[in-house]
Length: 166
Image (tube, rainbow, N blue to C red; front, side):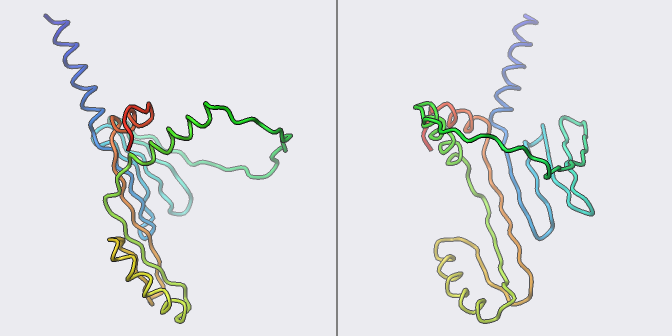
């Protein structure tokens, strides 16, 4: 009886994890970039004085400051590689996974610091609003981009395995 209860609790937790929303938010106006798996995990990028990556998993917080070394890369010899059917299959899986994401909110504002170019971009932004894309041109000197994308692990796994086409 106890084994059945433990197995059912584990299965319920697994189903909850698979159906929990995965939220990706990008906001260049506030310099906030984060990925959330509600209640289980959160990872965010903080760009104050230096770049730092924060990860919160089930109550534990980790912080790291990545150091990038761009100099001193070795050149590799270029060989022609044949494309196999598995690479085409992988590309289809990647495209299917990308199609499984849903855009919840999108907002962009652009200022090119040139009044003439901004004035020419205003009709284009109005056209984009007809397609329900919130793109605007401003004359205040500020540009920003806000995006929220949602998915869940169930949709990702079915898209990757090719069980469902999105």
